[in-house]
Structures are given as C-alpha cells and as structure tokens.
Amino acid sequence: MNSTAVRSVGTPSTRLFGLLAIVCMTWVVVGGLFFTPADLNQGESVRIMYVHVPTAWVAYLAFIVTGVASAMFMFGKRHSLGFDRVAGASAEVGLMFMAITLISGSLWGRLTWGTFWEWDPRLTTTAFLFVTYLGYMAVRGLGGSPQQRARRSAVVAMLAVLEIPLVHFSVVMWRSLHQRASVLSTDGDIKMDGLMLTTLFVGVIGFTCTFAWLVSHRQRVMAMRDILLATQLDSALNERIAEGSQS
Amino acid sequence: MSTSPNIARVARVVAAKDLRIEMRSHIVVQQVLPFAGLVMVMFAFALDNDDVLQRVAGGLVWLATLFSLFIVVQRSYAIETSDGALDALRVAGVDSQGIFLGKSAALFVQLITLEMLLFVLAVVLYQVQLSLAGLVLLVTCVLCATAGLAFVGTLYGGLTAGARGRETLLPLLLLPVVAPVVLSATRATESAFLSGGTVLADGWSWVGVLAVFAALFGIGGLLSFGALIEE
Image 1: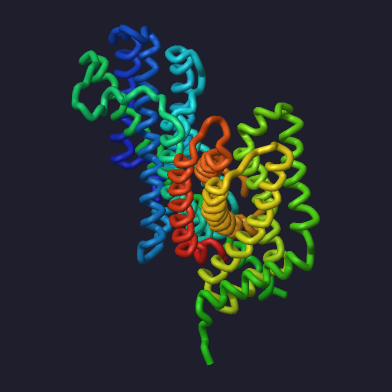
Image 2 (image 1 turned 180 degrees about the vertical axis):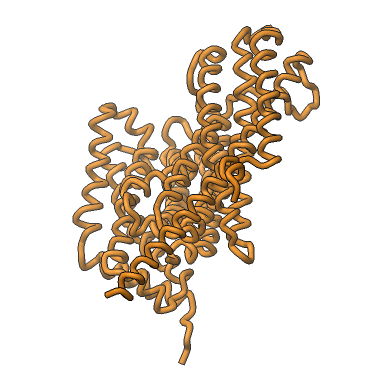
C-alpha cells in the first residue's frame, strides 16, 4: 500500500459531491444574504428560508435513506453490514440537519408568528422525528457485535417508519396552523421571485450534496471502525493462543 | 410428540407465567397501583382547580398510565433477564411470536387493572361525569389504547432488556412512539366525559386511530420481536 493511498480517504464521487456542495453553498450565502430581495410580508427574515427549507428536505431524505437501508439490511439475503452503516451514517447526519431545521424554523417563527413554537402538525412531527432518531442513535450505541447492532437498529428504524405517519396524522386531527407550502403547493402557482426561487433550489442541491458527502465519509469511518474491532479481537485471540502454546 | 407448540399455546403459557409471578410478588398491587394513585393526587395538588381538573381529567389518567407503563414494562423484563429466562426460552426454541403475544397479554391485563383504578380515582377526585353512552366509548377506547400500549411496551421492553442504561433508554424510545396513543386516548376520554364542551361522537374517530395503532404495532411486533431478542 503506498503512502498516497493511506493519506486519501476520498473517492471520485465524494470529491464531486464536495466540490458541488462548496459551489452551491457559496451561491446560497452570497445570493441569499446580498442579492435576493426581502419579502413583502416577512421582510429580511425570509432569508432564513434558504437554510430552513433545504435542511428540512435533507433531514427527511436522511430518514428515508435510513429506513430504506435498514429494510435492505433486514430483508437482503446477505444481511450486509454496508446497509447498516449507510443507515447509521444517514441518521447521524440527518439528526444534525433536523436540529438546524428546528432551530432555524423556531427563529423564523419568532420573527413571523411572534412565537418560538406552535403546536402545528409539521413542527410537532419534525420534533418527534428528531427525538425518535435520538433514540435510534442510542440503540446503535448499545454495544454488542456489529450484526447485533445492525439488527436492533434496523428494527427500530422500520418501526419509526410506522410511527411517524401515525404521529403526523394524530397531530393533524388535533390541530393545524402551519403556513401552507409555498413552493410545492398543489395548485401549481409558485408565488416567488425568480432569484429567490433559484437560490432556494441551489440551496437544496447544495445541502443534498453536503449530506451525500458527509454520509459517504461517515459510513467509511464506520466500516474502518468495524474492521479495527475485528482485527483487535483477532490479535487478542492470537496473543492468548500464543501464550497458551508457550506455557 | 409435537415439536413446535403453536403460537397461541406459547402465548397462553407465557402470559399465565408472567401474571402468576406478578400475583405472587404483589409488585403491581403494592407498588405500581399506589404510585399511579399518588400521581393522580399530585396532579390535583399541582393544578389546584376543580374546573381545570374536570377539564383535563382524561389527559391526567393517560399520563399516569404512561408513567406506570415504564415501571410495568421494566418489571416485566426484569423477571426475564435477572436469571436469563428469556435466553432460556429462545434456546429452547420457543416461538418468539408466542413470547411476544404472551408478554403483551400479561401487560394488557396489568394495565387494564391499573386503568380501572385510575378512572375510579378520576370520578372520585376530579368529579368527572360519565353517561352510559360515554361508558361504552370509554371502554372501547381503553381496550384499544391498552392493546397498543401493551404491544409497544413489549416490543421496546424486549429491545432494551439487559441493556445498560435501560431505565433511561426505555422512556426515550417509548415516549415518541406512544404519543399518538396519549393524544387519541385523551381526546376520546374527554369526549366520553363530555369535558370542555366536547361531543361524544368526536371520540369515536379517535378510537379509530387507537385501533389502527394497535393493529399496526401488533403486526409489527409479531414480525420483528424475534430479531430484537435474538442475541
């Protein structure tokens, strides 16, 4: 193994995702803060949207990836740990994005609604999703072999897929206040300045690339840790065998 | 000789075993029921207003049930893990679906007992009124909600059984999952009590949510419990 290979942890795809993320994020920062106009009703607070909407999208995407990867681990013939690592990495990164979503949404709510929190279905479901995946991460940290960890956490992730629609549905029945979706509205009438809309979409692409970049690296770190654990176990066993044969 | 007893028989035996242990140990009667009763009294101290208590009685009953659920679930698995009984059941080739149903049934019986006490306390302490039609709604709500709580409690109890930090992990995992049950059962109970200007008919749609929850987690539990307790 040459020294360059040891130093590099990137692949062509991670480099592409990283580069795209940097370009898009630069656009979002510059465009969102300096070039896009303020909103007629919301004023300058609308700029929070360039972070809030993309992070919310990525957070939900992350949990879909976790659910799908967990199902592929459970129902795949080989029960490949690769799927488990993708599920775990995606949940970790998704939690970070969901925290950003909740904080940015709360700040926007304070400026627009005059309150940090409203018991609205989307907000409440997002908060429950956040706590559910905190639990998922705690289950991943329970210990045991990688296969045990993968099996337990896959079940929890799939149960979360059952839980979240039920939470959302029951809170919708309870009450509904949230501002209607402005971009993905069902009437097809998008009421937004062109540059604002472009910046928002670039933000979505940028944050999605950041997610892909982080998950690729994180799952590789997890794979290395699993290999290290297995190697340590093997070497410890070999040492004990050697001690036994000497005595 | 039959090599694999059917699921119903395993469930019956496991449920009878759990309930027999509880009846002999008196933990539920001597500790869990008084705890739940005390929680109801503490709510009255904290809210300190008859009208408010009457208005939120349904929610308080289900919150007290929820707090007690953590204790009952942990107790249900403490008797299994302390001497490796769950491992022994698995090693003996006992069907995991039967274990799941049996433990859920035992939990269901214990929770129903607890809820009966809590509703009597709500009538006595919080002065709630209950009509015959309200009673029918309340009984249906209690049966559906308790089935959901028993399935979820058994499922997540099995996941955390024997794990370090299970006392704190169980509420972290259970609370978000049972949120729809607490919300729906509270609304249905309020309708049964006709508290806060609610109408009886509204309660039945919440019972529908409870039934769907119980069905989904019952099926989910049957399919996944084996993978959770397999070590």
